[in-house]
Amino acid sequence: MATKSKFQAIRGTRDLLPPETALWNHVEQTAHAVFGTFGFGEIRPPVFEPAELFARAVGGDTDIVSKEMYTFEDRPGGLPDPAEMKPSDYLSEIKRAMSSGQLPNDAAVIAQLEFQLENYNLRGDSERGQLIWLYFVRGLRLGESISLRPEATASVCRAYIEHGMQQLPQPVKLYYTGPMFRRERPQKGRYRQFYQIGAEVLGGSDAPAIDAEVIEMVMTFFDRVGLTGVELDINSIGHNAPHCRPAYVEKLRAALEQVKDKLGADSQRRVETNPLRVLDSKLEHEQPIIATLPHIADHLCAECAAHYAAVKRQLELRGVFFKENWRLVRGLDYYMRTTFEVTAKGLGSQNAVCGGGRYDGLVELLGGPPTKGIGFAIGEDRLILSLQESGKGAAPQGRDVYIAWMGERAYAAAIRAAKGLRNAGFSVELPPTELKFGKALERADKLGSRYALILGDNEVSEGSWTLKTLADGTQQEFTEPELLEFLKSVRVSGERS
Ligand code: HAM
Image (cartoon, rainbow, N blue to C red; front, top):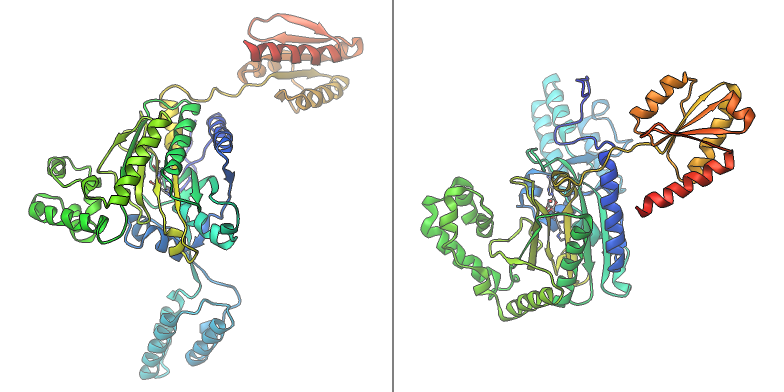
């Protein structure tokens, strides 16, 4: 039963607990297995990176970067204390720290310090002037800006460049699992710390077969974990050349200008900043208006149109069912050509369990060589919710054997038995203190144990151990070696049935 304590998990974060964690493990094991069969290897990037990496990759104007990142200053120790020196000396110390590499070189910080120093000098060496100076200096961001990762595609591309992976046979196929952080408004299926299982294919060609195989892999995974009501939406958003997406965006903007006064405030703003995002709108009254807007598929350049047609053909070849959704534009800046999303049942408004797409050019944008790229990320929290809603939750984890022991000699035998059984892979509960047999059996029952091994000093001196099946109360006698053999045999027949 939940109790209110002084400390609670921060809003939008939560503890994952047994037995649910067994389902999480099962899902992750399935990802390792399925992705392995497609030739993917696991990468584990750090959970924090320079804020600039995400601003560059995901886009400074996106909601993720502009509103949702957890960013903090990584200030090194050993910096001078501004309260202990003259402001002009402090400025010299900061300049020294920047030139020695202790602090990142930041001309804006120096300009601000110089400006405040001028103000300080104008005020004269007064107590008030000193207070204002200290207030300003202490609020300055001197160290590097670090962000908890809101997604991992940027990290994987950074790692690809950093480790010279372009020298490896291409494409390089990587996958990851782990927590991501976005300061979103929490609701069912939307958390501030959430988990993704993602995969990226970097380098080599942009053959449509690669897009299709990545999508086939994610659908195979969903099938393997037993996700139901799955729907795959695909689209192509073209590429960033004047005769392709930008031309469409202008047509879209012009069409939106005609109906601007009928749109909500968010969409009105987006007509100016990013008309494609208007297509994401879920507002009821905007739907009939959006339905009349031009479709990107009719405005793709010849190469992008051919690529899209080939991706669809490749999906059909693989028996992957999809629905074309011309409004699927996705909220991250790095996408081009293929985009896709998978939705599942039982999730309400947050029903996207996977999003992905092609991002040729992202590695180059981050300072690497021109590189093709495509990938996806599955929202593991939502996947688990959907599995639970459809009755595929994890069963409470019982114990195979509960050892009810009484007496000192019996305890020594119980410890030995527990070791032997655990080594053979059985889950065993060994009570740390002696309990009357009645009480011990009650506990064994509460823990959902299958068997109770009853060990008193008599059983130990006679060498005949009693195993009670808790479901029907029957008892059998075994010698120590027979017991292990018997449990192994019922496990095997249990696995078969
Ligand atoms: P995304 O669409 O931002 O894409 O996220 C992918 C999935 O993560 C979503 O479909 C959703 O299931 C889950 N998700 C996102 N935010 C939350 C949240 N606050 N709470 C719970 N689940 C959430 C990306 O992150 C891209 N990096 C995917 C990608 C990889 N594209 C290419 N490669």
